[in-house]
Length: 138
Image 1 (cartoon, rainbow, N blue to C red):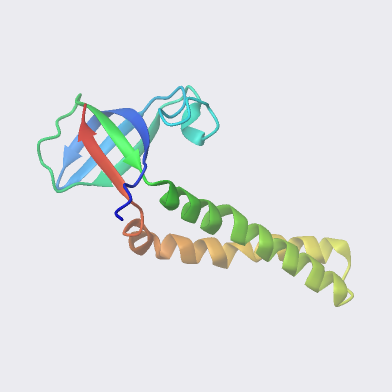
Image 2 (cartoon, rainbow, N blue to C red):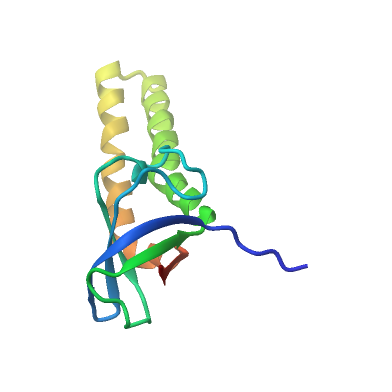
């Protein structure tokens, strides 16, 4: 049985469209799927997203619907928040158990994030391919 993917939808405004890239400004009062302002898009500030699109008929000023697969969001939260938190806790307890004082342990747990986020930055083009975002004209 085929299951239809449920997407979180958000209304946006195309601010730029060039070379297969569409820049969209998302101004939100919560996503249409939950109508709550729980996500980062829920505040009153505009959020800019840049999306690859094979469609070339987007023009600046077009109102669009951005559909995001929730699984993509879960992967992003895991990579950007949960794994670094676990790394910090493990390094903090590991360095403390080795007999170093709390200052050294705390500094080590913060410094461990530099190579982690550097790797995320270097791999961002590869990670973008795993994100499922669809843009449709409204």
